[in-house]
Length: 113
Image (cartoon, rainbow, N blue to C red):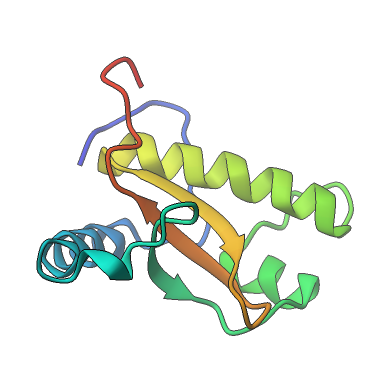
């Protein structure tokens, strides 16, 4: 894991993410069709689409308002920060069932990031 000054990842557990990423690469190697071409590989689902729940689960209490757009902007920032720390590109998005999930985007990090 990299150390980057001034980076906040709120309620994400970086150790758990690193473990999930390691296992994801093993699974993707064995079963590449599980990695969706646009979304990536599902690491974790938060089993909710309720914005209040998402704010509480990920401890993003400094959002200005709890509108979906504002929260998704914050989650994009959180995913970027976590990506810097774990060295793999991560992104938040909603799954087919409408729940918030965090995805691994294999090969998504460039050297300069």
